[in-house]
Length: 350
Image (cartoon, rainbow, N blue to C red; front, side, top):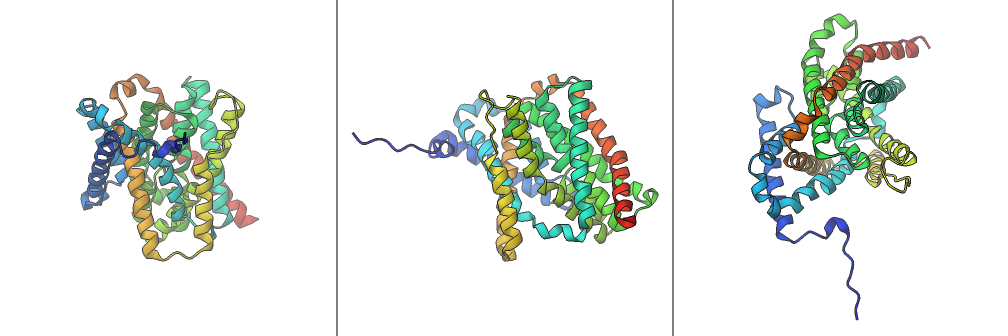
């Protein structure tokens, strides 16, 4: 007898009606979200397509999705899991290792210190003081310390966080990142920073890329440029962060029953893609196409996450996640400002 060929797990459901209908549902939500995010009045709020997608997804998931779940769940879960990983990989095409030159080694050091200190503080406050579960603390810490919702979603496969915990973490990023987006330009006259230094400060402490852009452009194009480059440095740290997180959880037996060290393959590919993008000149037309596809993948993943999130579970999370995110938000402003000043003076005087 001929042996049947095995199908890769990520492709085994392709072709069934649940997969196709679920994919159509998620693509529709993603396209609507991208359209809404392109409207001029929405742009002024700093809301990205990812944020809008999870909000629309939550509305659908808590209204009529239960009536169509059996016909769509396969495609929804494919978007939430597999497309998320593809989106993180493609995110590497937005980054080059040459980008750090405009902010210098001081910018690299600031990004590294901010990530490490913010995440460690999240673990201390979240687990030790607030007694939050480790998954929620890690997800909120990742979102606050690296790149907002994208970092939360990237950390989810490693910590195996439940959908409502991921949604809570994303919600805190949206709330406090949005506050920061409007607050930072108001603080600028009192910070005693140049436009360049302000951009580095904003890029190293504000949650989402879109929020960083708004906070920078409200001052000047120079501030926006420095802010985005510094933010991209934080994004570049996502892959090593994910690998260290995976190794740490594996050693403690938190992410697998056999406690094996499981290096996330999508994080490795993320670094390799960024390296390729640094060494090879890719035509802008192709980069634009890749980045558009990447935005679609991530938006679909956020939409699927929203659909699979139940508001009752979010309500059960209580006030503690907001207290953790709020504490980290205060640290990002006050501690981030102090760290930025300290490292800046170290490099100037050194």
